[in-house]
Amino acid sequence: MPAEYDSLADVYDWIVPEAVLTPEGSADAFAPYLEELTPGARVLDCAAGTGPLAVGLARRGFDVVATDASDGMVARTRALAAGHGADLDVRACRWDELPAQGFAPFDAVLCVGNSLPHASGRDARRAALCAMAEVLEPGGLLVLTTRNWELMRAGGGGLQAFDHVVERPAGRAVVVYSWWLADGWDDRHEFDVAVALLGDDGAVRTVGERLAFWPFRRETLDEDLRAAGLEPETSTYEDDVDRYLVTARRDLSLTASPETRPSGGGRSGNGF
Image (cartoon, rainbow, N blue to C red; front, side):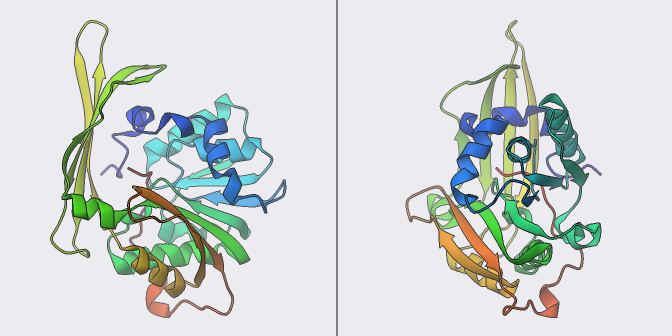
């Protein structure tokens, strides 16, 4: 059975904001949060998607590993790296599989693109964060982005179409989302995404996929980070802003409890 995002891998460029579509743009967007890293620092992008951030960071002199649960996304990342002459290790790997990969410890781990909500509930989310912490150096940095789920749930979900035709070098498309919000925060939510590719001859070809996600409150994320042995450090959260970024540190004085250690589940995939 294909992993989530395999169907969307070939059309993901129409979903990604133009500002972070290229390796240069994506690396620029996250550079302010990685200023402490020196050339050669080891960086893991554990929800690499189509690879622009991983490739951009590799081109800036970091020792980069890119992982994703989707084979389709991994193939896109490898192709992007080859096209830009970037040297990085790219692997198909779920979050719970990270500690078993034999990686040397990382100075920073990035889990961006709103990927963490794909972990199936609190236990899986904490297991995923625990796996990220386990591959970090003591004092190492975690950078994570997510939607503002308080704002999303207050809006009630439903159908959402981009208000413009998205143009990319490969063509033009219209993107449509549909949110299926469950009653409880801890229940399975679902999200349909459709990319309608517009042909020059007037034909339309649509590629879509239904994705599952489990949202969380800002306070819940802080609790989950601490339970995984990570100390929250900064946050860009604002009540009325759609997305935010948090940073956290691996702290040896914070030890994850055995029940939060990875034991299956916890899948990767790019954001939405």
